[in-house]
Image (cartoon, rainbow, N blue to C red; front, side, top):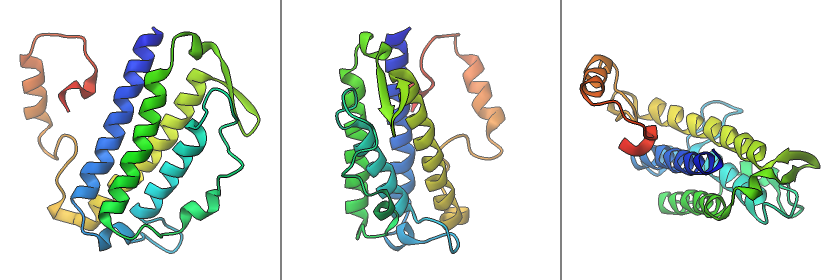
Length: 184
């Protein structure tokens, strides 16, 4: 089961990274700094925050608290990533760090305890906690992208009014066991 957990988790991180990348690719540089409301965050800020969180949580993942003393979380909410290529590079750098950590974990590691702000988690729980956090922010990035693009938005999943066609193709195939992202 643990190999399945680690493999599935790795595929999910690649999927979430891809959703962010595919959203960012649809947007102009200025769009990445657009903020939905007074207290909202731009995509650039969300990228900075997710990457800052990944760096903190997954640097020396098994041996240090996930909230590093060098992390300045509040500064992650400042929009100082200047251009689209910098935003994409930062986004991919964070996900690459997380994926490298996941690739290096063993079944035995899953039984260990790690800490986030002095709260103990099994390695599995800590990974699930962070994956839920990242999915939450990736969802925000996608929604902001859809708001900006409007009718020009290119769907990242099944487009509206295409469910019947999609399902028909799926049910024409033989049953198989695979990760849902294998078709991405």
